[in-house]
Image 1 (cartoon, rainbow, N blue to C red):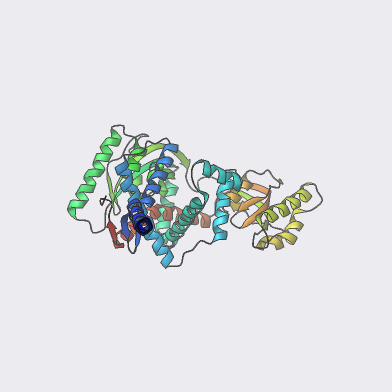
Image 2: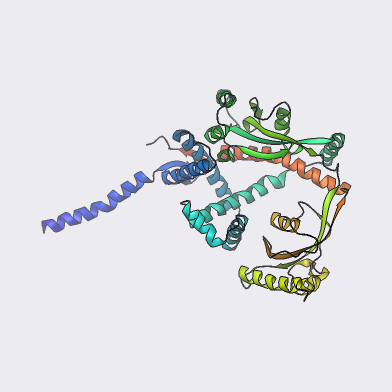
Length: 430
């Protein structure tokens, strides 16, 4: 009887003990509005960041620095995902499947090979899918809340074109940066503290410190784990603050600390090169035709590829005409014209489609090509060089000005969102 009582006492104690243990293991490290970030989420983010940095050959920063960096990133992501959810942004399973398939194809792998590669890197496929879903949601949120609201006036375009016409050659920069964000209503003391921290980072970078490691340690920008790399950007597509600072730098140089509405910036010029000014030289145009098979619940990706492979075999062997096959089989609005598109420039089509047709010779028929719209067969009919029309020059100028404004506008929007979000930090509550 006594042993039974003891057993019951032990069983009664177990759930409470396990609950306490679970709470200790998965304690709350931050509250973001009405949701929490747990220690396990933070540890997973830190582990992923460390693996990513090692793959890039960048030594990870000290654990404490990386911990705070990743917690701030999780807070911002959580705030953005909450806004997206509340305003109806969703990514369904079909859209997610297509995104994963595109990434696998970009890596020249089948879906099975891609999944195996993830698992070799200790990344669960289900977790990867959910992370990708979140990244797509965040991208759509940025497009709606920031990019769609950027205004470019006709006067700005006129000035841009005048400056471009006066310049025989423009410069492109390969650069990296570090951003130390400051709140909108920051006190003078907090601003000075951020400036002092930025100057210390600048001094360390100029003394030969690893810029990528410094970015991972201190930068609040979304590309911190990429070493702060912005990559190649034309001078006219950079914020004026950056473009002005880069003029006097040589490759390898570190800029002074720069102040913008978002906070303090430090730039590293990796390299520079000249490029033909927009509109100064003839542009390459391509005339082509295509056959599109859209995938759906009734048409699987394998079905679409198989149908196009059969059509290609008939066309290449001379037993069928491409235009006639497009009229009968294409799901695109160009089917009535035999699949023909007007003369197109680089950038007019989605990247997967563009890469495929640029590799084709005249009259050559591609293998089935995957894009967000479905699967295509592409045939290049003709290429030519032509002067860029005035209308197209204005369109390109508008896009360049939008690009110039986009990064600043996004950082300012993130700062405002962070300021408006209720955050309670519990990281120190060990």
